[in-house]
Length: 91
Image 1 (cartoon, one colour):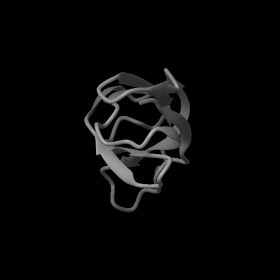
Image 2 (cartoon, rainbow, N blue to C red):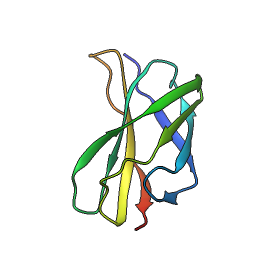
Image 3 (tube, rainbow, N blue to C red):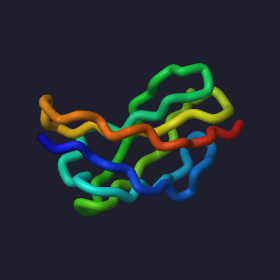
């Protein structure tokens, strides 16, 4: 069973529509990228897999401003999601 790992976000904060690069390990079969906002709501984001260690995503429109997180889930239903990585949504 594969568990993706996020090792970095660039940038670590942004507004709706901004592009964020996720770096890590075992990202080639990413099935979804999710942002959690300060209000603890979860939103899936558009993304593109660049290679096994890089995914590019777009900050979703309806994130509440403040500190939240980003996590990655794989296509494999038996896989465990990545640990969340801190992301700050700006208004």
